[in-house]
Figure (cartoon, rainbow, N blue to C red):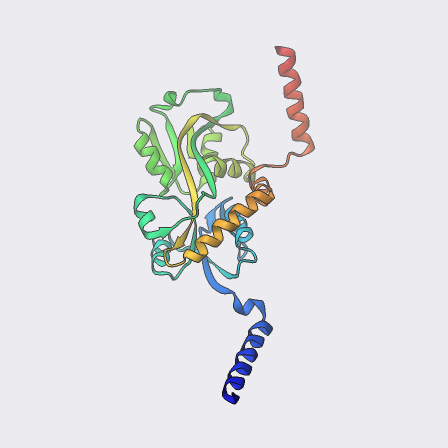
Length: 268
């Protein structure tokens, strides 16, 4: 009886120790890898991670028992290698392929759908994509979009180091069009104050971006699924989306748009 009582007392004390332990001590540590140069999806702001995907992940995983450390990717190849081995638990901004389906786990829904389009000067008017055959088109060098543009064919591909440089070439008339993802491009045009460039034609391709999870972390995949559902239902996802993709218009811009609308109404 005494032995049983001592064992019971030990169990109670152990439970009290667990209850008294700070919540942070019970959290599982995970590593989130992100592209440091993929605005507005992910980037470094000073030394801190920032961007749409970073905020969505933080909101989805909040209060779910994880302590997150953030690691800017050195390269995509290394990030996928570290995700395969479990050195990294989550990588953002990944597209799903048949091979990646075998290597990683993915949430049920994408973080965002991206449309890949051509962008031309507004003064060019509404032009069909076919009219760009034989024209010079800029694209960010070494990206998936350069591969897409080369596969599209019939245009003079001009790879450029940065997206800003590529868009400014179009604005200055040094190239006929730019090819890239819609939301990232709109953000770059706004951020760098490059006016009078707009998308034309239908999307050439659509790309869904996901959080990719280490294959041994099924619990983390489930937590992400639950968290993403929750922030979509609560409206938090929409708030984050508006912050990064719906630019607030200043008074001058609002006045200009109203003047244009009035002029168009009179002309009709």
